[in-house]
Image (cartoon, rainbow over all chains, first blue to last red; front, side):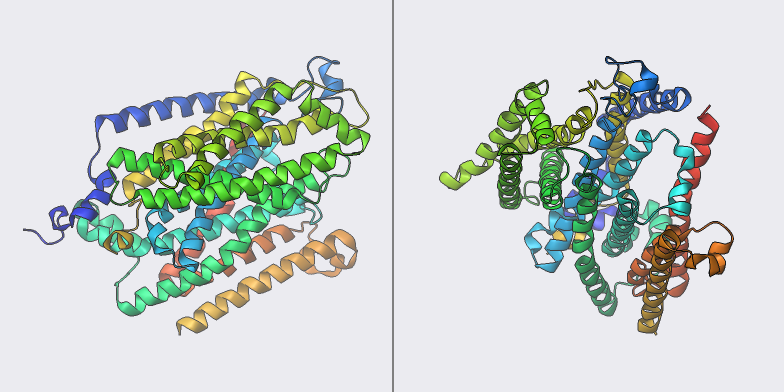
Length: 441
Length: 98
């Protein structure tokens, strides 16, 4: 038998490397569909660039002529694009955070989901950046950020924080992957040339392994505060604006950070469940691992609901008139049909599903928890929408506006999901999504 | 040797961060920046210096684990990659925008 051929692998390794070794018809169909949808997204973005933001619903189309209303009289210059930006930043949050926590707290049991989470961060951050690019009318002036950016502007803090997080993620992922890449050169001989070069002279000696372990540990220590900074800074884009009712709040940073952890952990749970189901990894991603993630999700969800209630109570109990206007817009106004189902179905039902095992000790059901995680991610996108839009639709000096996203806008934001899925699939075909060390352990 | 390399990279990164932030703050709040040669060109680029500092600081993790040649290749990739995002977006949108 040829040394290093795929047949030299252990059964566990072969199982983990399934996505790299086998490509079924379903894969091509899935990628084909994603490519078509991405093509549609590119066409829509081209339309927006060539015709301007007039193709979006961000101006108030009902109250006054367009030239008067855009951004000042009841329109919503931040619509689904900025909502999606916060959503992707949130998703990216848990990725490296979970991986860093696993490393720092020696939670070896969860090492099997560490890379699933890391890659999620890697694909989510560019989508967050793109969402902002969609929102600006003149992306050809992006260099102005680097040339003339003002340090007082939270948007520039965002650029710095997101760049830091993205770079840290790339470096962290590469260093955690390097050992696996070296092994892949042996396991998959037809790709040896590629993996050997990517491993960059990795020899796998004990000293080298120890050095990687130590470096990753220090990087993990740096990443945790970076992660908190990123979402806090996103919240400052809103929370520091005194002129907008509904945003100016001291609770916003922690509110955003916890919300991000909820959406990130929910996304990791969803992906872990999907991979387990798709590749029959029940012995790798065990019920116990999923249960642990769902418990973490439940705990942060409870904190998030608590913060939400605290925010609503503070606003509505003797709140300033402008705050009350935004609040009534949500509670009993045009956004009530979004607000109440969001609270009850979007957060209430997942909370009940995730809390159930507390009262009935053997009641953990991975599939139900998966449904809860999906509902939570949809709910958190909508939650960000009702944070961003109602405050803009109720400006202090002008009449209330209306915001209805156009097909172009929706197609563009959906495009970020198709591209994220494509990037994830590409990664899945090149690198193992579960650390080989975790399997051996 | 590796420790010296890592430390040098860390120091260089931190120096760039401090320089960038200083230029950034001074340039925005006082006229002191006029006397700094970089600013006398009329283009500040202070945020870029600060962000490059961040990238180099983080790359200390790579300097600690990779041979020098590979480390430099990675650093180049990170910096060029970061700038390429801007160049590509600006170029493509400039062509399409009316």
